[in-house]
Length: 477
Image (cartoon, rainbow, N blue to C red):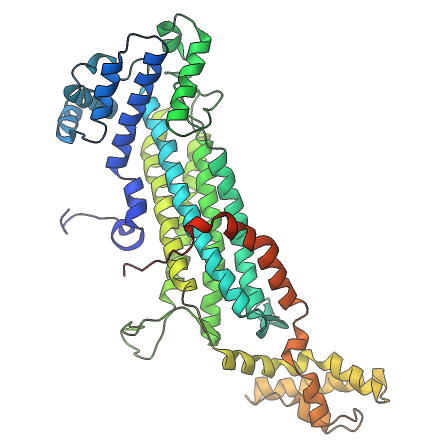
C-alpha cells in the first residue's frame, strides 16, 4: 500500500504483528477452509455421499488459497463466500460438488469470527498476565515505601508505593477473571442453516436428529470447542460480540486508571514512565519529559471503551432470525477493539517493565504533609506528659491553621512542628516530636496487605500461567 491512501494507525503504530495476523484475510480464509474440511469430514463419517478422497483433497489445499481466482469471481457474483467456494473448487475438482454441502454463509463467517476472537482472547490473556506479573514485582519491591495517599486528589493518610500498585493489579485481576470466563464459555455457532432450524440437514440426513447433532459436535471438536450454541437464528447472538468487547473495554478502563495515576505522579515527580536516552519530550521545550506512553494508553483506552457501544447497538437491532446491518460495523468494531487493547497492553508491558521511582522526592512530599497527619499522635504524647487533651486539641487546631497559611499564602515550609515545640503546653522537645514523625508508622496495614494480596491473590494466577511469563514489549514509535 502506497503513501497516497489511508492506512490504519493500529497497523502502522500501535498493534502487534501477532494481533494483526489474527484479524488478517489469510487467517480468515484459511479458517473458512478448515471449517469446510470439518464439515465434509463429519458428513463423510455420518454416511453422506462424501468420500475420504474428497476430504483429503480439501485438506491438501487449506493453506494454498488461490486468492486471484476468488477475487475475480467476487467481482462477478458479488458474494464473498460463494466466490471462495468457487476458488476452492477450482483447486479441488473432485471435491467441488460437496464443498459447503448443507451450509449457509454464516457457517463459515460466524464460526470463523468465534475462532478468531478466541485466538485474540488468548493473546490478550497472555499479555495481561505478564502486566500483572511485572506490577507484582514492583509492588513487592516498594511495599514498605511510605508515600502520600489522596482522596479527592488532596493529601490524605499515608499509604505505600507498593500498596498503590496493588490497587492497579486488583482491577486487572478482575479483568482477567472476566476474560477467562469469556474464553471458557465461548461456543461455535455450529451448522444451523439459513434460519437456525437446520432444515437443510434434516433433508440431507432424512430427518435423523442424532446424526445432525453428531455433525455439529464433530465440527466443534475438530475446531477445538466443547460444543455449539443451543439455539440461534442464522447467526450466533450478537450479544457474544458485545460481551467480549465489553470485557476488552473493562481492561481499557483499568489501564486508563493506571495511566492517569502515573501521569499525575509524574507531575509530582514521585514516579515516571521509562524515558529513553534519545527520546525528545517536546519540540519547543528540550527539558520536558512528557508521559507519552501513559497518554497514549489514556487515548487508546477512550477509543476502546467507546467502541463497546458498537456491538451493543448491533445486538439490539438484529431483526428476527438475522439482518445484514451488522456486517460492516461488526468487522470494524470487533477487530479494532482487539487491536486497541493489544496496543494498550503492549504499552503497559513496556511501562511496568521500567517504572522509575524517586524515593527522596516521595519522602520530601510526605514530610511536608506528615505534621498535619500526626497531630493526634502528638496530642496523645503530650497528654501522657500531663497535658490537657481539650486544650491541646484547640492549640493544635490554631497552630495547624497558622502553619497552613505559611504554606499557602507565603509559599513557605510547613512550620507546625516548630510551633508545637515552642508552645510550653505540649512539653515536647524537637527530638521527641520527630520520633513520632516516622512515616512507616502512619501507613496502617499497607505492608501486610501487599504481602497478603501477592501471596493469596496474585501468586496463584502467576503459578497457573507460568508457561507464558517473561514477555516484554517494544513500542513501534
